[in-house]
Amino acid sequence: MTISGSQQDWESTSLRERKPTLPCPLISSPPCCPLTAPILRCASTLTRCPHSRLAAAELKLEKMYTARRKIQKDKGVEPTEFEDTVAQAFFDLENGNQELKSDLKDLYINGAVQMDVPGNRKAVIIHVPYRLQKSYKKIHVRLIRELEKKFSGRDVVLVATRRIVRPPKKGSAFVRPRSRTLTTVHDGILEDVVYPAEIVGKRVRYHLDGAKVMKVFLDPKERTNTEYKLDTFSSVYRRLCGKEVVFDYPVAESA
Image (cartoon, rainbow, N blue to C red; front, side, top):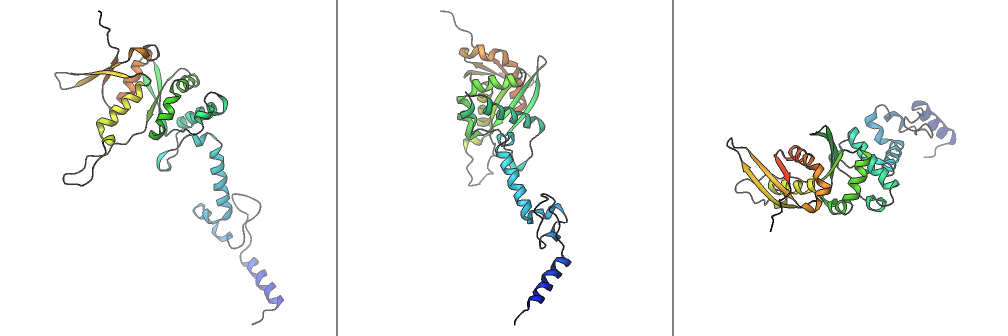
């Protein structure tokens, strides 16, 4: 069957008349094709438009070169305003501090929160990925010093993100890793809070009402860098783990 040229012109003309070209709501030029114009009636269908895919690519590219790439939340949760501020601080240090530029290139955070501590002070808790913990510890002292400058002297604490797994049911073949137990996770958080100081001893005191307070002794070598933060350490650990902890330094025994 042969189709004449006039019939083809009529079909193409009628197609344009029936489905007129509409401008793309994301990009004014070039317009969407006539076949995709009818599906631009609601935002939920914009993903079918080629221009919407272009906008998504531009958004992804923008995140790669802005502060948003310095924070990665779980399950697509949007960061808070304060978390954006912390991510911006990391981004500024990466681009403005020559000592930390190469080290911060591949580092990012999972979240951040600000809290009040005794003495009319504030502390900033920054959650970092567990797999990047070693990289953070290499630059911990320098990074904390620069971050505390940016946050007007507020105490900054880096804590690795850990997960606690429930104990398996009786008769279950599932074996819970020791690293996912409550005790191990709380001990790991305690070590992160006091870093770079090392824990040299622990003592638990039980009260008559059943309450208990743990006393943690820190290495005196880091006393200069950590003594003014002892109240901050106690408040941060209480918020993260719900346990009362008192920090102190061991008394040197006289010969």
